[in-house]
Each structure stands twice: as structure tokens, then as C-alpha cells.
Amino acid sequence: MGAIEGNTAGMVERKTMPGATRYFKNYNKDELRQLIEPLGFTFAYEEDYKPHNNVYLNQLYLRAQ
Image 1 (cartoon, rainbow, N blue to C red):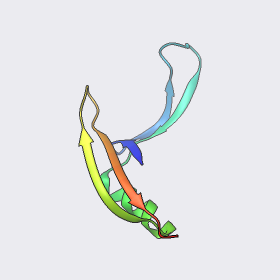
Image 2: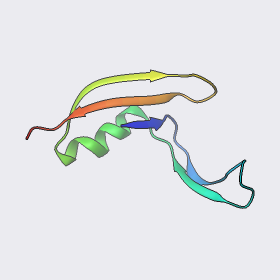
Image 3: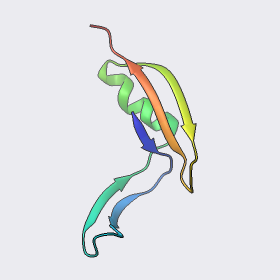
Image 4: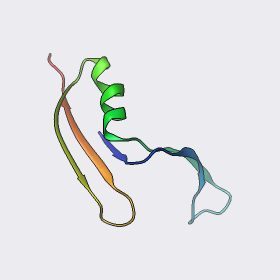
């Protein structure tokens, strides 16, 4: 699972396509776990990095078969 860390949501205009918008929702670490774990996935690993202005969250989940 990958997401940008934050607590914002909404429509954002694409810089390369004026007039075209996309919906974005940013999450915090705990919020992602609360969404994913009830679906039967088990949290296994987490790493975040900040290549520019945003913190990117990467979380690995496992699901038993």
C-alpha cells in the first residue's frame, strides 16, 4: 500500500492538463492500518521517505490463504 501522508482530501487540477482535475486523499499511518486490517490483512512492514515536499508512506500487509 502506498500513500502520501497528510490529512487533506479534495479535487486537484493537474498542472500538465489545465482544466483536468483528480481527486486526492492523503492518509496518516494509523488511518491506513484502520482501513486495511479489518479486510483480513496483517500489517508486516512500514517505510516512509520524503524525496521532495511530501512524505510517502509504504506499508506491506500479508493475507493468509
